[in-house]
Amino acid sequence: MDLTMEETILALFEQNPDVAFSAKEVGRRVDRELFREDPNWAKPYLENLVRQRLLVTDAYGYWFKAREEDSPTKYHQCIHESAKTRIYG
Image (cartoon, rainbow, N blue to C red; front, side):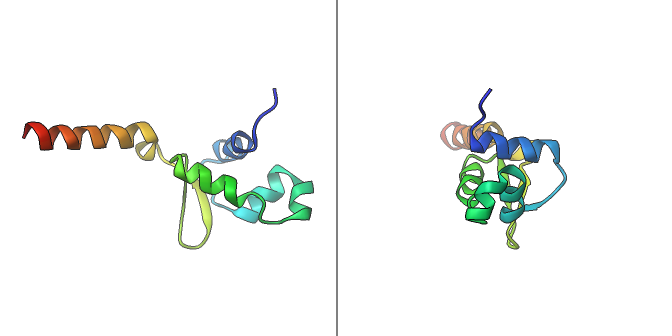
């Protein structure tokens, strides 16, 4: 089975749920050849995973697996509940 880069990166975070990684560390662990060419190759993939709410990042440039309560489904449920409260009082 051929995994996409995002799936491969996400698998790294799922194997190490309590570990923070820098973008360079992710790039080195996932694909050493790409890392030698461009040490920051993983950053666009990480940013996309943050937009999907599968990863979170901190001010120091470390990336973490998103907690269950930060998942997209939970986020949309909160928005839905908020909208229902506004509409129906």
